[in-house]
Length: 357
Image (cartoon, rainbow, N blue to C red; front, side):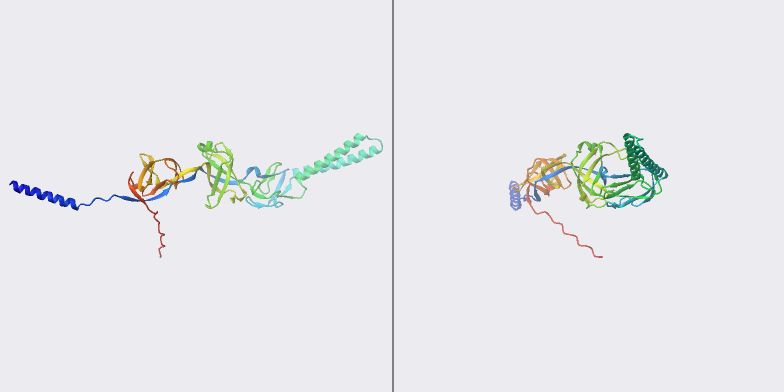
């Protein structure tokens, strides 16, 4: 019995020895990753806003009615470009204005007759030098008054008001056949070379704006129509309808944006020229703490970092990395700290051939 048990034990040991001799060691896992060095880059702090382009209000000419007139004909339309001397409106003096003109003409005739009579009396030694001077001054005053009335009223015939400078008709403020009192605006003429954008600003962002900050504007109707300008005025007042404050941006003549264009604006608040940036895909999180993997002599090292700005493609690293550090941007989800890894080329996506129909 003892001999049999000893034989079984020897066979078992032999079998174990044979099994150990045939088991191969498990190979070490080596991950394939894509590596990109951390680079120095400029990061901007910006806010977005929307608004519209219009002519600069301080450069708009207002054509007023100097006297009461009747609008006979409107010769331009809002948005129309005009040059110096182009006709704008045809007007005629009203009955009241004609009466003012007639009175001025009568006053001049009376002053001239009075001056002539005083001169005859002076020749007969029946008037003094003071009387002659007074009569002459009355004639001068009456003539000046008539010139003033004619400049405002014109003559009994209709007159055409013409543009004194090149620009764009911003608005026509009267209607045909309207009787317009003196001093009433007839038309607004904007300087086509001076444009500005009025942007709606959230009240919470108002304190971050400063005059002189750079602004990039993109026309909403045409995404490739881009213009740049600077903030020239901040209107710290909330509009009762939009519930927004406003910022005014001056645009250069080359902006190429038409009055009335709706724009999307990006306002540059601050710029960091020496930031360290990595691809956004390189940043992972553990318990809401950001980290990246750095490839160090074939070993993946986990590095805790601090994140700043994010432009959608890159993340700003404010602590933890230096420029040139080899950061894993693809394949990092499979890594663990201390794991072996090898850098490979980034995969390329082949273009998809069009489907024939």
